[in-house]
Length: 355
Image (cartoon, rainbow, N blue to C red; front, side):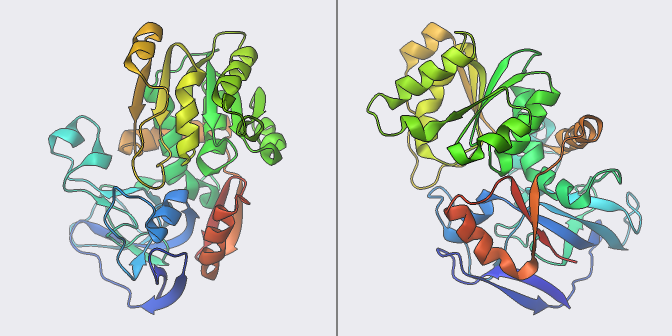
């Protein structure tokens, strides 16, 4: 039997472990025995229905989109993988690979694609079906539990830096730097030769500096003042030698962090929107046309990366020694994990042990 975690009452953090039959792979599919699954803040958002732009999550949904496991059965006609291969399942579970979006590399926005853990079974289960042409081979030199979190967090922050065209020596500001996305963003930014200013709550300063950030700012010290955003921008400008950030990675889901993000940018700076804001859609604070023209700013967003980005992400992690800082927890602990997320108690990532 397949032990799986389901969302029992979407809109809350209630989950439970159930048993269900193990399914057979169809042509072109493989059956995976998953060993680990990272828990992303987006999983929390899908379980609790906090994203106003998404349809309600169905009761009984199997969540998760950061899975690593072994191929244990090949569907008819599957030749690209072999039994025992270690592979990962990403945010984008499948894509047609032939539409205009896919041909431009936008596989995560494929109209015919599916998303792991949202309206399709995800990686919070021991056995998972996946298209053979869309899973990501995992180097055996990587810690498989840590590699699970790279399937979303790592790919996303690496792709953000790649598309922002960061250059050696530039200043990168990471918002939510001590979280699952942020702590990986620090490491990838450092591996690409940039200098990092980490922003998070004060309790995460030592953690972020230990990952290679050049400086840390406790954003809560600027939260109570009416001009707190201006003071925060002034502090970042001071730390960057007056230049401001060339790239700001918004890894937090806080609307407040987005409201302050544009002010942190220097000339021709780029804001990359990664963390999905909770609640209804709000404008990005400070992004007025006049200021953007004056400073020649750029803003773009992404969900995650494509298959090529995933491979590059793992190659860099292997070469640069990038490691997920994670806490391994049992399969029946997801509700508590979500509770800890709500209370800001998690440094790095939580990875579920599905073995």
